[in-house]
Image (cartoon, rainbow, N blue to C red; front, side):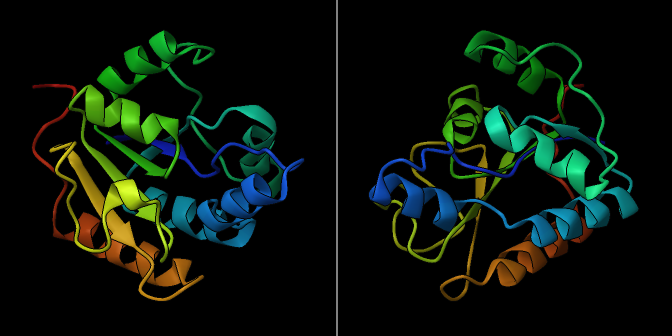
Length: 164
């Protein structure tokens, strides 16, 4: 399975509010390592879809990620890549909304106090039927969200894929 991964949400650290949101919505390096390793152990070819300053984090950790099949320097390029993936795994950032708008399968990792657009609870969003939400069970508990995502993987991926 070809799985795209985006682990950080818009690094805007100059403003206290956006810096707090970035830290709340982005996976810490140790949890990024855990997620990549677990997906690869389950047979996924993990493709880095991270852009910006955070794109080097996985490489610095020693994660062996597959390069994207084409450049993702724009939303159009990213959309083309999403069409070729079996699944996107992402934190709450623009690529999650793009996948939903394109009706591509995506699993979104959300902080405990997620943006109101994701509603307060539940694994679904009324705006994007192809997205599945994995929420922190407690504030700061990325382990719980990742555990739920990996359990869902073990139960079976969505049937929609690049081969449909």
